[in-house]
Length: 343
Image (cartoon, rainbow, N blue to C red; front, side, top):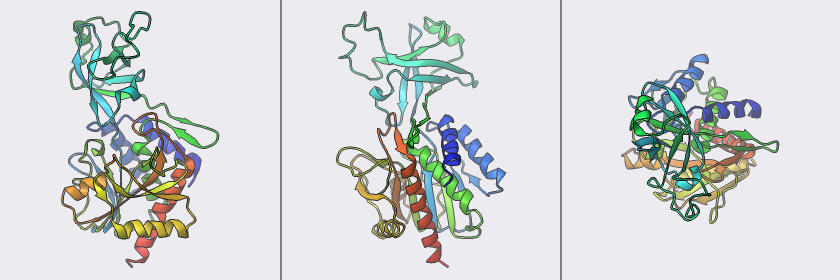
C-alpha cells in the first residue's frame, strides 16, 4: 500500500457528501476512477456499483459508500430548520457541527446544528436539556428570521443536510474524520481493484459498492446470484467489551444479527496468522452489516466480516493507517487464497 496515495483517496471519498439516498456524486467519482483505468462496472437501478471480473463471480467483496446524514423536516417560524436523521446518528455527536443544506436546485447553504436557544447567558437549562429533534435545529448562515424568508431561498422539506467531515491526518498515523464508516473500507476496495486489475482478469471475483447500508437495505440486491461467498469490509468496533483496536484488523465472529460463516472466519484467522498481521477476533453487540442484509434477503451465500478498528463510531471517528494496512493485507490474502483453491 502506498500510504500517501491511499490517504489521498480516502480524503477525497470523505469529502464527497453521500448520505443514504444521495450517492450520485460519489458514484460519479467511482465511475470516473474505473473509466480512467478501463475497468468494467455496472450500476444498479438504485445506484449500487458492481465491478465484476467475470460473468459469474463466486467471491464478492463489498463495502458501502453511503453515510449518515439528515433531511430538512420543517422550516420553523424563526427561520431555523428542523431535521430528520438518516441512519443512526446520536444528536449529542453532531451538536455544534457545521452543516451544508442542499436544495432541490443544487444550491448549497451553510449553517450550524445547535440546541434551540443555544446561548448559555440566557438559557439556564442549557446543560440539562435533552438533545433531540424537538430541541435542536439548524441556524442558517443567511439573513433569514422567519419561515417566509427561508422559503425564498428555495429550501424545502426533504432537502438533504450534510455534516462536515473534518478530515485530518496526524504525524503519527491517526486518521480522524466523520464517515470513516465506511469510506475507509471503500478506499481499501479501490486499492484492491487497482492493484489487482490484471491478476483478477477473467477470475470469479467481483467488488460491490452498496449505497443504502446505513438504512438497512444496501446488499438486499445487486450481488450476482452466482456468488458463493461475500466478504464484507466494514468498520470494526472499538470500545468497552470489544477487543478492536485502531491499529488492527478485526475479524467479526458474530454481531447482533447472529454468527458469521465459520469456515470463512476460520480461514481469515489462519491467513492473518500466516501473514503475521495484527488482528483480533471480536463480537459486536449492536451492529449489523451488508452481510446481514444479504442473508435476510435470501441470498444462499457464506458471509464474513472484517475491518479496521474505528473509534467513536457514528461520531467523530478515528482509525490508524496500521489498521487500514492490516485490513488491506488480509483482504488481499483472502482473494489470493480463494483463487488458489478455485483454479
